[in-house]
Image (cartoon, rainbow, N blue to C red; front, side, top):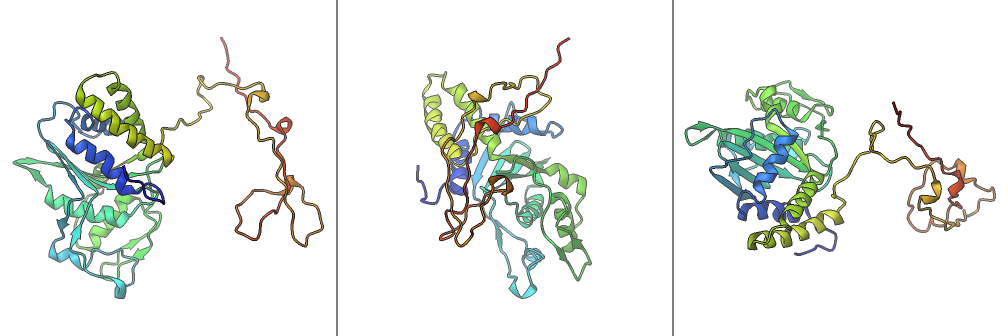
Length: 319
């Protein structure tokens, strides 16, 4: 497994997960993946069992129709900097019976709303049917957010159509408005149903569950899957994409701490001096600390006293 000096790239994550899914029998990784999406989006008609036919394509390229090539640019980019675009390249396309998932994977929290729009419009035309059946096309965004991204963060006005886009517009609303700029009619409800999102944290949890299940199996494929998933999980963990549990104040399973002596405390004292500044600085007056570049080092003096740490406990009522 190749590691870049600057860390794991999004192509590494995408290739190791969806690439492994591509070559394994469906029940090993594809079925658990579809079950994950079905659990997150129970209202969608997604089949995760009894799969008849499946295909996974990695970084496929699809030709953009001629009438859209001049207009497939972010609308907030000045006209003189725009250029024709001839292909879209999703990170993966997953075809399962009558469902098609067009995957856009990002390693960061970023959301490229224009990419999602372009993939939606092209895939709606390309994958309208599977054989003689009408297909269900989903645009799947994968990134490192903890909640579904909402805003498109783009501000633009189209002079020809008069359509304006606000930074607070949702992703489905952005797609609808961009389609309107191109003279294409898209139903907002249909776009909202087709746009789905999962986090790398979800995938990390999925990999963990599959690992636990396959470690108990002794067949050759399970041993093969275990080795690859261990490497993939190590990659996710190194990026901080391990499963997380969010604290809830109403969760009676949370543990209340009454003894602060059980908390690990940083006991070392950090000494800082301020150049040409003779008035002492009280740590309590400093609202926050930031990492400052050289030579502005040794700025503050501070220590952590465990006796001053306030512990919030929760009382559980007993009947």
